[in-house]
Image 1 (cartoon, rainbow, N blue to C red):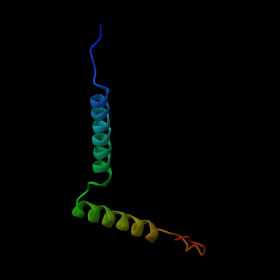
Image 2 (image 1 turned 180 degrees about the horizontal axis):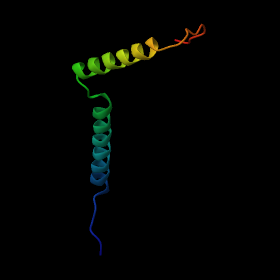
Image 3 (image 1 turned 180 degrees about the vertical axis):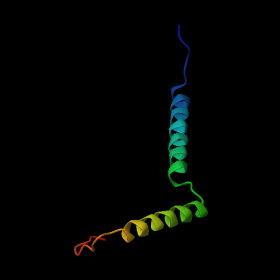
Length: 64
């Protein structure tokens, strides 16, 4: 015979693991410090300015 399982407890454990996994994913996506965010934004801005400086001609219909 198999092991007796309390279905209510098993559901709670399953739901808790799912919430923990979602929280981990959220931490990875949004868990950057203010300094890291500012550094990333500054780097992106410098790269954009560098690319814009190397343009051969100005485009008139540039979407923003």
